[in-house]
Length: 195
Image 1 (cartoon, one colour):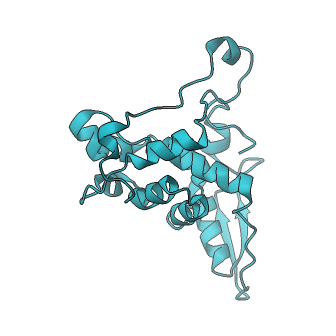
Image 2 (cartoon, helix red, strand yellow):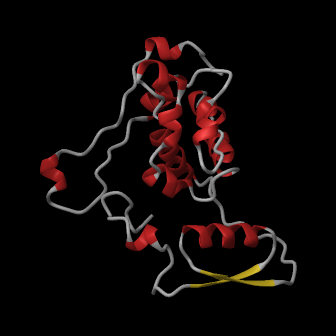
């Protein structure tokens, strides 16, 4: 970890929301973002706590302390690689996850000032798109075909994982577009459909 005592000197800073006067004119996302330096400072608050409860609370097993450290050091590509090793779609989870990891953060439990894990995750994946770290992968095909019924979040993850293993995957869904509740159940202010 970069500075295991940064949490003592750097307070939690959330990006906050766009002003209400702007939000009432559209249905766009309400959250703002911090600048790169402030985001790195927030990542530095992740301490070397020994037993990272954030790991236990995360349903997908994200390695939060590891990518927080890479983010703090300015290694955005490495942070993305660590994040994407356990999360197929961080562009979704960084926006809609209820952040159980933050609720289990040692800093939440001790002083009610958890690391801004969810916002940091969203910042990492946005930087990955902006900087071109996310590339189309063309795995060697194994000659087998698989059909996945349901193009919601679980179906998309299964299809992605099978595709990476070389299967030719066809997704079937009752709706006109993939995404399931991501597309049809979450309003644009929380998860823009362009994402």
